[in-house]
Length: 349
Ligand code: NCD
Ligand code: ZN
Image (cartoon, rainbow, N blue to C red; front, side):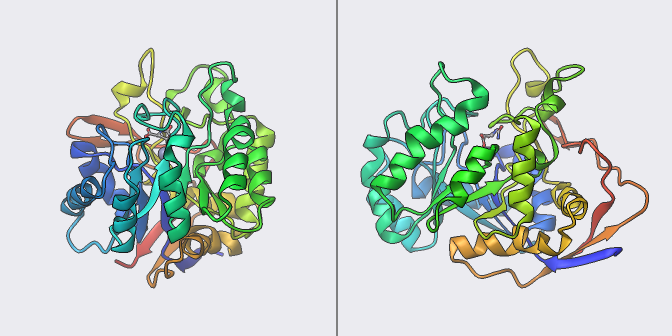
């Protein structure tokens, strides 16, 4: 097969940032995706519906002319979030989901949740109205090894929360472990997970073996190979509980190539090409569409997209741009660790 046409995909976990970086990165997502769940971890974070409306306006202003891209806005959960504000924003369609960051877990998560009990009034309201909670599933306990933080989060936070509030619909964002995959598979309803392209393609050796490579560093950090294989199995299985969230997370190169570099991998320009390669390698090209364009809308109870994208396979590996320039400096693009033979050649608006 040399070309593949699929329904236009959505990105169910995306960082667009603001200002010069937003301006530079947004066209790459808008070129291939119809919708994206936009993460709220700006500085300061997107906490209220009014914040989300203002941010949505800045995104709309940065969109290329004629783009049909729709940003789906999220709110950043704090211990002071007002349940009535969240419910009103969900009811009128301004906001799609709420994001839980354990305080200190990742980039700009300092105003996140320290004590989940304090967020229960919001979570109870969300359970009543069917609004999804998106979780960054890592504990921040310094006694827990960074490679174990996802598994420990499931045990200490997620499973107890599911027991306490079974009707709350939850997406475990960017699952990186076999433990995460197994937990999602163990739950019949109300729980799904996003998977990133990079966690399907790299393990922790990419970051650490033969020199330290900051552009492969993100959170949750890539794990060992057995975990990567479990993620691939989940993504390519067709199981409706797993769908694409790129976690494309641009940081200026100078903030990554430093003694204490930021976490985040910028993959928006080549996500679909990389995924076509992953699914081809695993003999699952016929399931790519479910992963990128069907399972997500089903969980979010949104219609599937009408448009399409066409991918083409070439014998020669594709060269992707090394970086995207912004007015504040370059942002390096994710370089897949093995040749990719696919590229997007057409997409409906
Ligand atoms: C994200 C960011 O930079 O905002 N970083 C990352 O490594 N994925 C935050 C996040 O999703 O954890
Ligand atoms: Zn993220």
